[in-house]
Each structure stands twice: as C-alpha cells, then as structure tokens.
Image 1 (cartoon, rainbow, N blue to C red):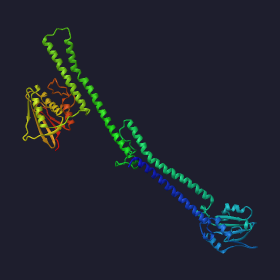
Image 2 (spheres, helix red, strand yellow; image 1 turned 90 degrees about the vertical axis):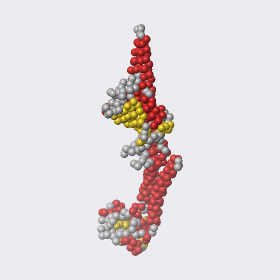
Image 3 (cartoon, helix red, strand yellow; image 1 turned 180 degrees about the vertical axis):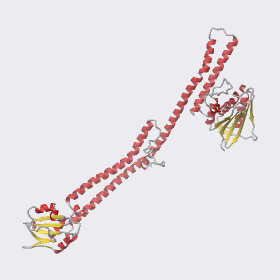
Image 4 (cartoon, one colour; image 1 turned 120 degrees about the vertical axis):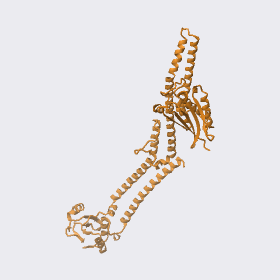
Length: 490
C-alpha cells in the first residue's frame, strides 16, 4: 500500500469518526426535542409526576366548571393533583378564594394586589416550596394558584421550559463545535507529529548528527522500546525507512572521511618527519661534492654511494608510508586468488635465505609430517610482503648463528604460519610496542635500510585479509610469530 493510499485512508477515517460523533450528538438532541414535544402536547390525564407546573395549571383550568355562584374542579383532576403532591386555589377578580383543594392552613384565603407576584418569587414566606399562578380572562378573569411543600424542579419541567430549550440548542452548537475541533486536533496531531519529527531529523543530519532524534525517554522518537514503528508513524514508513538508510550511509561516509583524513594527516606528518634525516644526508654530501675541495676518487665514490643508499632509503620510506596510508584508510585494492599458503611461506623462507641480510644466520622451512594444501583466498603479493617483513625482522634483529624456522599447518579452519627464532628475544616493553610505527626497539641490529614500518605493515596486511598476528617472546629465549589466515571453505 502506497503512502498516498494510506494518507487518503487516514483522512477518510478521521472524517468518518467526526461525522459519527456529530451524528450521535444530533441524535441525542433530536430525541430530547421529541420527548419535550410529546410531553408538552400530552393531556393532563396522562401525567402524574415530572410535569411542568404550567401544564398542571392548564389541566386544572380546563377541568374547571364556572357556575353562576359556584366554581368547581372535576374530581379526577383533583385526584391526579393529589398524586403529584400539590394543592390548588381558584381566585375571583378581587383575589378572594372561590375554590380550594388540599390547601395548607398557612396559605392565605385572599390575596392583596401584588401579593401573588411576591409569593411566586418567595413561596417560603407561607411555608411552601413552590408557588405558581395562571390568569385567564376568558374564564371570568379567574386566577388559578398551584402550590406544593416541595420545590417543583424536575428535569422534565426544565426541559419543557422555552428558555431551557434554547439553552439546550446553544449547548448542542457548542458541543458540536467542540467535538469537531477535538477530532480535527487529534487528526492534525496524528498527521503532523511524524512530519515535525522528520523535519527535526533532517535538521540533525544537516548539523552532521547522524542519528535519529530521541524522545524524552532517550529512545528514537518513531519507535517503541521493542524497535517497532509507532502507530502514528506507520503511515510514513517509507519516509522513515529512507531516512534510516540515509542516516546510516551519511554516518558511514562521515566515519570514512574522518578515517581517511586522519590517515592523510598522519601520512603527511610521517613523511615530512622521516624524510628529514635521509634528505639531510643527501643534501650534506651533495654540498660537499659541490665544494671547491678536491676529493680523491675513492672519497667521491664513497659519498656518491652514500647518496644513492639514502635515496633508496627515502624511496622505500615513501612506498611504506603510502602503503600504510592506504591500509589505514581501507583503500588498498586486493587482487584475491586462491593459493596454497604452504608454498607461499616456503618461497618467503627461500627468499630470506638468499638475502644478504641473512648472512651468518640459518633459515629453514620445516616440512609437516603430512603434506596437505592450505588453500587461502589472498592477494599473493601483499601476503608475501607481510611474511617477508616478519622473516626479515627475525634475522636483522638477531646475532649471527641464529636459526629461523618457518612452518605451515592447519588449525581449526585456519591456515597458520609460524616464524620461530632462537635469538636474543625481546623484553616486555619492546614486545608491547612491536607493531607501533617507527618503533625499532633497543635490540635493533642496526638495519640501515629499515623504515620502522615493517611490522606495522605486516600486521595491517594480514588483518586486511581477515587474519591475525600473534607474537610471544622472552629475553634470551627467542621469538615466535604466528600468522592466521582463514582457509577457503569447501
């Protein structure tokens, strides 16, 4: 279901609720009006309680018989009057009572001008709770008085009053407006809250805050504690999903940018620092050769050789720093191929044995009892370089007579290469900083061609292939370096 369809359904649903509630309000009001009209037009004989005093008086008037010298009220009317706990008087034009029924003793038998009006406002003056009058010129200008010890204040009586009916209509209008406003507010709140959250989210992204804004409880505002979208946000699930993806990508890109920037800064700092020493040597010897002093051919050859060595050292340093930068920025392209790690380790051992730096040391490759292929998916050039750095470290930092043994084996889904020497070993400080950039340690054999990056590069290259490197050593007990790379499954 598309977001347009859900929004349309949401609005139609709220409109239906609004019309339903308003319909119930108008229905209730219509029923009340119908009851009022029914009660108002009902004859007195069908009323007992809950009738307005005007209706009762009109019923008494209609059942009154006026003779030449007497005034009487029909007995059935009086009986019904008794049921509602009332009393009645009929007054002539002079205010004298000409007929009475169930009248208490403290009620006057004649009334002065204005007294009726006064008692209607204060019936308590004669010990009554209610006092009503009805004057009719068509019936000999007679006045009917209706009273009761109790207050005549029933809901039906209030509903039958024209003033109360107008109030009910006003209440209906106010209530309808209130219901419409309430439903509209709930609808607007339900629809606008997610949109406000989305705008806040976009503002956070603009401020490089790559996370969804949180609510008061510290949780993402669009989700419950279980991680599901809240009901009001489900209408915009595509928008929320797109923002999730955008936030994740921007956060990942920002982290990548920061990592590359840090690596670039480190690379620039490193290259400017590490090129200073060989560059100073090159410059110094070049200035000597350019001076007016006449050097012997041997001296000239020696200085030229030094310049060449330092230039090669700078070239290796630049290469190593460039490789370190790409490794730290995770920007090193790997050309993977499935190869036998045993053969790669054997070739690295042979290359080291033929290296001039191994002069006076013994480099051996230990064949396993059972010859098996250790297939790994790696970039052969970089893995060979990592093993070469580890093997080279084993010979240049140990004295003549040291034996370096290389072996390869399988270990629980991993291919493992061990480089073991019986040399001088390392103290705890050197071992803890072995993979730090530019750290050579106090036991350095004086490798003039080293850059101080070999071990760091070796570990980074292995880790780039999903492997690990572990070193154990003790002073006077030699060093063991183990390299694990994941075997090809299947």
